[in-house]
Image 1: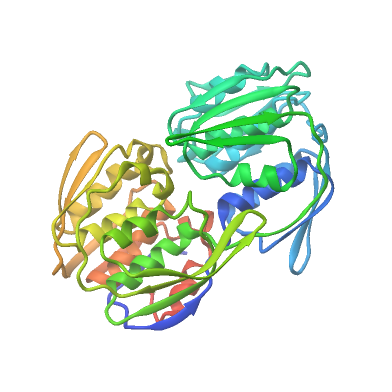
Image 2: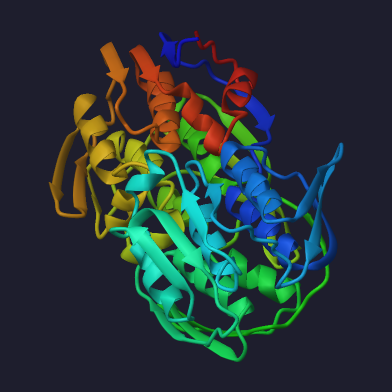
Length: 441
């Protein structure tokens, strides 16, 4: 079966309402925290993507019972020491950096050696950023020069640490928080601002945590060895999945879209703030609080007069997964857009900044790059008529979906490889496109 799609015509105008896939970050966190609870947790609307399925398979290997029902998953937690770890157990994270890093935090008290492996793409990503601080808790950890496979053997003599996270990585911060959950005493974390789903979840489960927000950093104290009970949780829609349809609508003529039940946590809405600064018209409707997370319906309309942006750096962490789609808006905006300090994009499923810059050049956009800073010279009248083949992007799901948006809004004849990459985060992507009238061959 071929692993590419062809797009030969632009999308027509639409006025529709859609749902997008459930939030991947929260789906993975909910499974991991349910595995450490005492008793049964019910998780509704769990994202059934490859990354999340690999998370479920792995906790089953660790002795945690999981059962799928019609509308929810049941996870039978056995407490903070409930993992049953066979020696030399191998856990396959597939493409999920979130699971591969976070599970290491929960294995700091494991009885036996456990190896974490991943696919070709994940095996090229940096794990030293979590391995080094985790070693300070006391476990034995080895890696392949800071990459996968990573092997860990826990200790029963865990000690709390002081940790400074300077990248703005929620994965790194959350890994340390999960290790602290298992550790007696107070672990102190000073973290550059990033998505805060773990902190919200801890508070919701009454896990002892203190968070003090400062201008650029959050100071987080976690008090370990506090058991908590099983819980019920409904996963909201993922704003990262929304981003492709937000940009599709902005760039498509005479179109309007309502995206329902989306997580609009302030640490995740950088794309909305950035695009509205570029003259987009994106609004929230029916905003409500669900267990500490903000949920809303998003309304977005076409925009004819997009303008360039000198993107504020403080928005980087809250839009880090969406910059490839933001770059498409910059390509169609009047003026020169500037983005700075985007080095974290190079640490994703692909060297995403490099791939995105090469993509823009391929479609005729002038881009100047200096290290991790880029200038994008917009072409408001950009229309494509040639043939375009997109491949060799290390099966990065976000690059593939961004390419689909470009093909559907800019014109041209496109052949896009690695269509199965969407299964890691948004397996329903094509079905949502079909609802908007897209014909994909």
